[in-house]
Image 1: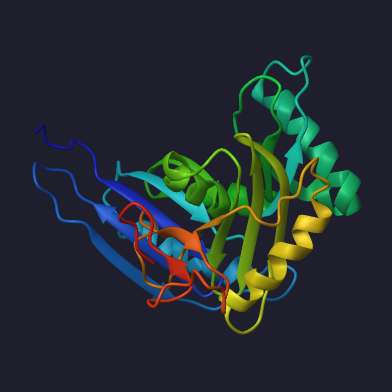
Image 2: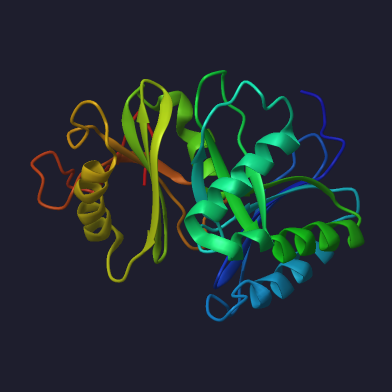
Length: 270
């Protein structure tokens, strides 16, 4: 086993907490998980208070650390961008994503920074929009701390990438956070529908109510309400790189496990 030559860090950036996963360089480094509570989640720029905490967290990392920031769905908007043969580079795809967000959200989308996930030719792409001021601030703080910013990634994409090898070709997929759900529909391995909403109370009941509603709105060629729903659950204080991956069983459903509403799958646990 070769030693790691760079420190590596992943940071979950959420309204009321910033959670750091730090893997120091070396032959047998020990992972350190630390959560810093913070305010935020309200107002015109709800990310301002968490951003200050993010800066404090980054400044404690060694210079040269490769850092990845996973952004909560509280601060992200999602959309599906159609495939186009005329779009040949990243900037063109981002321009199309901006147009899609403007069509849905109006002029306010002009102040957003859009990123588009890669996908195979002919497939729709998942686009994420953050306030441009937030995206620029994260990049600026990382640069001032001497960190290499590898990615700014929304929770939905991060969770999907962690779970994708286990997912069937057609299923629902949800990223679950305290107070927030992001839900997508995969049909034959391609994204078909996206939705995101806040919730109060328990996430199990909120997701159980959200699924049939979004199944009606998905406009699929065949019924999708019976498809399994996989989830990536981002618990408070949990490792940002290790969300709980499993299959959701609605409260009261016959297949519900005795351990809770998320049945384990392929050794994954809630």
